[in-house]
Image (cartoon, rainbow, N blue to C red; front, side, top):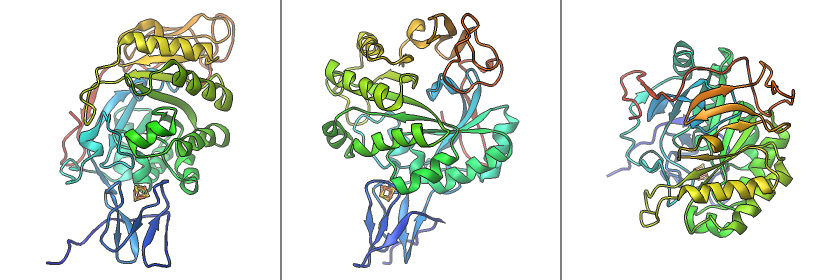
Length: 366
Ligand code: SF4
């Protein structure tokens, strides 16, 4: 019986090897594929003499979220963002918190067909200020993401990438040129952590972070999921925070979020709130100006204080904006210091709501 025909959109970032295989150059895995094979991400596949993206134009669902949920605390605060993802992932994190999407193999979740123009129009009709490429890593659906992003920009909407930053140098420029903001997961700060728990590598992620910060206009925030016994030592957190302060700058926001037992790491307990608060103190001591906790309820560590005078400039209760003391250009009303980030007038009023959105015949993210 012959193998099923692979269909998809022509993929970029690959080349032919002398031994007849095709090498995908999109991410540091550099998968080498014979005809009919799929890469580790499962969504990029070889069909004859070309590589295809098999998920172009199909989504696992759409949802309108607060931008703070990405998390982005310094990018259009309070605004609504149309969020979507596809299927598959190029890392294999044992602690994945979105495994039903990222590990999808049968594509039964990909029921929401949507063209780039349809997504941009839906975002505009829903009064969203941005579209977020999230739920699974947008790096692996680069061709779809950049086409959606271009359609969004044409309507004056922004684009937000939520990614692990596991992308090869060749593809970074095209991808981040379309992104106005990015939250990059820095999953740990040792090669051992990335190798054992994600079957990946730390160095390319650090390169991506430096690239975004120093060679693009993309607003950058970082998230580290703190996992008990895995990446929560004082030493590792201090090393991570010192690297961010030194190589990226003290104004780059860092979010420490709580782990919940999931996927293949169900025997590890949830992160105690005290661990996140300890991590925050360590990062602040390293010089970072904006360090947040996530997945726990703690207004003081989720609000934003002015880096100049220490006044509370954005109060948050979960994803609700409760205080606002910035002018329309993002200056502190008390001392005039400009808050790092991208601000456009008063805060949005979306609040903490999460609204599923139907496009086509699909179903929403639950
Ligand atoms: S994007 Fe997918 S196919 Fe390409 S190298 Fe990475 S895991 Fe392999």
